[in-house]
Length: 195
Length: 195
Image (cartoon, rainbow over all chains, first blue to last red; front, side, top):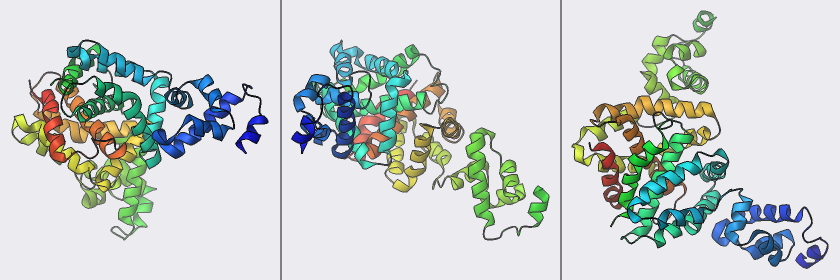
């Protein structure tokens, strides 16, 4: 059936990309991040997996396109971790605030987190993506015991700070300058990265 | 009209409490926490304010009853802050985890936070209640500069930790023991409470 559908379709037609993205959203919603595959998404869309790779690259890149995440969290995580070790906490706070300050950038994460509060499938998608595409890069650069737990504790602080600043909008946190938050929260988060 | 309705009603009848709670939910949704009053809620329910006080006590207690929050956050906050100062961070983590581990206790906060992500009115309700009934007790006991900002930073870490543990359920954070988290996160949060 997949072959029959494939031959009836113009590869590269104007709607093919949209159909792949729609298929990706269904696949990720049903199978979460780890269970989804480019092959499975291609089959759902009735196209060749090579076409999916051609248009969107890796599974991670396809996920970002499907969820309309306009940056690459794994690259951001790698950048934060690649600078001088003692400034890791401050870089993490500054980078996280810059992303969350942009409504377009925070919207997909808020939507996923909101769904995760009522749908276990959305929670699985969020945690698997967070582990594969963000935390893995952080953990790989940490030279401390319990590095996974520490990385997650650090990210949990960043997440809570972003929610209270941009969603709950509690004062004075909502109006504090980025510099103020970097110098207050950065050294606290740094504790998780120090041996 | 309020008097007419009042006289037509049996005070203390079986549905009066329910009507007061329903009126409270409308008043809090429309006017948030600071704008809501026991008088306004009594007027909406068509009863005397004294009856509302008789049944539910203060505005804070009425809010807790209306939102089905089965504990008193302001008392919990006061307890956390009343122990020895160097153990404040650890007590905060232990108490927060105990509350969030209970689905009945976390549900109202999750519902409010979820609404806050899409409705500014719900965000206002959450932040005003958080400030009046929780943070005020923390701030009053802090002897540090920027104590409001520090208290909010501390609470933001607790909130993010709870969300990643109980909603996103990311591992190893989701399965870590309470003791493990108290000893990892407690001293980090303590930084906000130390001068």
